[in-house]
Image (tube, rainbow, N blue to C red; front, side, top):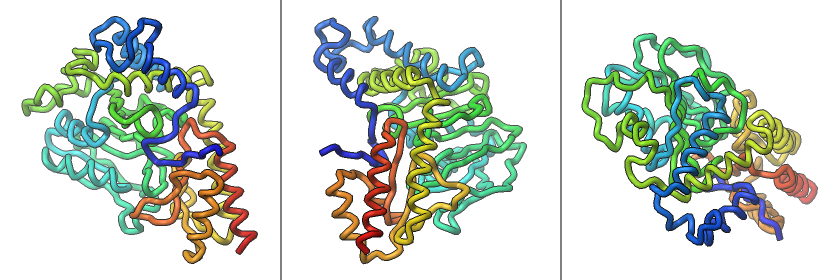
Length: 354
């Protein structure tokens, strides 16, 4: 039976990427060595890193605009610290839209004054705040573009007089945005790009070097830029698979093409949530995430029945986060429309049984 993998992360990747990566584990590019054992200083892996960096900038439309792409370690959580260490001199502004946004804000407080410009904590983060003002004297503004746990997504971003930083871990490469509005973007690979182990950081170089504090080498973005993401041994396999995924996305037609595919998937699941009286969406409709649909049963007594039906249909990873309960369908770039339709069909079948 085919498994339909809705896990929030680590998550589904394209089958062609799995196939090519599995071959490389045994014999990478015909050199009779595994991708897992080649030197990160070898010409073969340097080519991988260079292609991965170039693809990231190309897909985001940031080539030749003063940006550098880095592949680092520690996941997005490490960037909560790194961003503040490198950019926060006096005051930073943060938009609090969920668990990860709150954790980023918490780390920043170690380095200076932090202004929470708005928060949706009053409704368990089921919406994106609107109408807030970003202080013009802030060193930067930080936001989280998509909230995996709560199923909300920023549909627009504020015009700011200060550098804008975004955690795009769960919707990187999924929709068309003017990415040049951002001075720094970071994204853990394990949700929409590759396996756990690396984090993509895309940074405009001219925002660096403005804090007075000394920055440890391992945390200093300038060090990583100067060493082309090889200040220390990089996560070779994670970078390689991320490169394959970006290569796959480019072949499909890039972000514009995948955005249309993602919108079709989201339409299928949200139409069923809104139509079916046995389910209700968690996030406010105007802020619903295209990547992560969160929803609950209107009668929790049906949960054992629905769970068994989902299991029989091969649905995997649909249980919601404990903060929300219910269910969560993570529909990242590699998710096929067919899988989303199977979920919608099971929801409809439950209605027919009830």
